[in-house]
Amino acid sequence: MVSNDKKGYYFIDVPSCNMCHQKSSGNEIIGLRLNQSQGLRPLNKTGISTTIIKCSQCGLIYPNPLPIPLDIEDHYGLPPEEYWIHDEFKVDPSYFLDELAQAKELLDYQSGMKALDIGAGLGKCMLAMSYAGFDVEGFEPSRLFRDKALENNTELSPEKLKLGTIEELDYPPNYFNFITFGAVLEHLYDPDKALHKALHWLKEDGVIHIEVPSSDWLIAKLINLAYRLTGSNFVTNLSPMHSPFHLYEFSLKSFKENGKKNGYNLAHYQYYVCRQPYMPKFIQPLLAWYMKKYNRGMQLKVWLRKNT
Image (cartoon, rainbow, N blue to C red; front, side, top):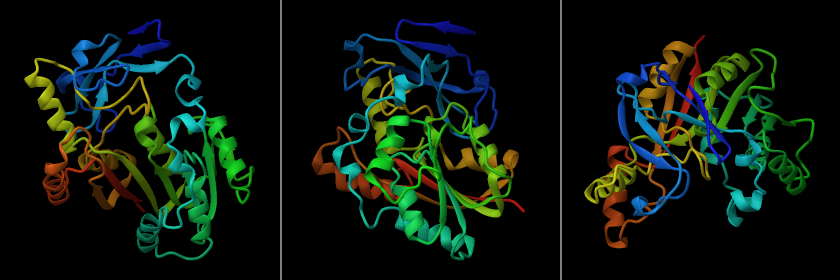
């Protein structure tokens, strides 16, 4: 089923979980999500909403129906200054160093290994990988983001930083040792297909790094509980129709199940606590301790190794 609305979206029914292919009809409906920031009282707001589903098999959280903008520039045609906070433009010498150290350990690193940054954004990750000794390429679907990356970083080559999407572009098979999605996979309409294509570009025994929102984040569960206590059926998960346009939240099992289909295994993972919106300051240290101890942080980082 496809339908349109005055906000510039069409909506597509999602028959199954994108990562493990469990039928949506057998998955859990966890609530509704508005096309704007909801705050603590979403019942007081008007707008368009979509249903949010949690896969009963792998824990993936996704919207059904899936809202797709009539023009992708409605989402990512924003000036970089509006999408990122000002601090994101600063070059931090420690940026991506922990991830690179982990990748090098998993790869048995040698200087000059080829790396690809999918969704290069402002180009900071490409620079970090280049400084670390990788031969780096990348691509970015937003023309404004790519232009800002080249403007801010003269070390980046326009030939190495392409304009386009993962659906449009292609690279030779078995070409890269290391590929990073960064905070990208949650924005893609078909993560399974994107992983399949990236793995085609990856060398045997190569590694893919991914950072995504966790579907087990404690703070989201607490906010959803607060919504229920006020009689609301809305949830805080995802933001499919407003910035930052997150379409999916993932669990470790999402990648384990998808790896069976796409030919990779989970080489390493980490959870990160990150921010605690709406939580009183006096309880934040306790919440942070709990999230760190029980892997209930906001961000999940995984390193996937291509099967030989």
